[in-house]
Image 1 (cartoon, rainbow, N blue to C red):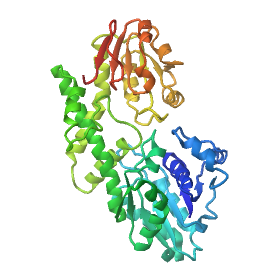
Image 2: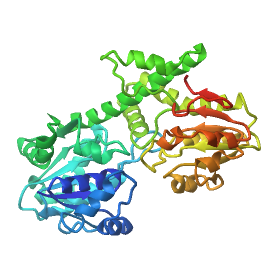
Image 3: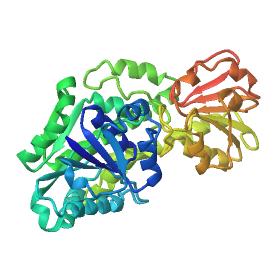
Image 4: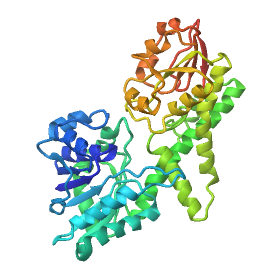
Length: 428
């Protein structure tokens, strides 16, 4: 099939490359000429494991990029994968997505065959009708040839390619059998290869599945963090407790690693958006508000544990890990941000290191000193905070001997206790 992808961010780029890998002819469309040029050169505009290999294999063959909507109608399906960032009140900014939806509709005004526009971007259920109207109004007299569906993504940064090509579920939100059949055709090679579960429902329910999925996981993490904080007060290892309760199949062992909390582009944005939309509808989501409150408090607890041992004012403090999770350079809502802000407010001299995310964090905190490696960050430091669980931090050992005061607060359960090291686990 011929497929368009509007937007070349994390979702659009990975989806486009993966659909090309399934055998489709894919064109990605983006307003950023540098991003388009990078893709056409076989270079990924984002750091995502496995993506470079897919681009190298398919660019120039079944995958290309452009800034033009001119030939959009020639394809069978167009996916909208434009970002919907959070506003300060927690609501999502659908402006860029609505503009792309309208432009997509306008590009279909001369359509003489049916065309499916699929919302891949994350929008709340009430936004679906707004997007549908934008596409159909843009299409004008050709609106009878155009249908809008939803197909939310469930890809994790750092494993987005793997998650797409080996999904736990695929969700189709459509209003007609024709649209369902077209989406089935898009994913047929993947379903045949993996046997993935396919959920077929309406567009609004499909989007609610996306939000419910992420908010449930965020809630599970905040709950285990809350329990971990209580365990810490009792002198109990929260990880030992988690191992035991994870044996209960009603709970499950995944997402029970307590620590400094969740970040990234999905959990914070989707939780805030669902809270905002629920309030707009007249419902006060108290539990979801508590989920956010617990998460926001974990970085402060981490710094407080350090200050129990060290006067940080005027002293170098190492911050290990800047991305919101390992495997990505994304710092959006990284727990390192409030940690650095709190240390800065206390007068510490922050020395930070991350294998991938330094350039991104430097734009946010240009005044911070950035180390060449973990050993460089630890050298002469009066304390260290482990914020991201990169594998290389697990291997640290003698590097701690070079610290002026070997005090480590571990927010991810990756450093082993050892003689000569004052060690504090965040929840253990």
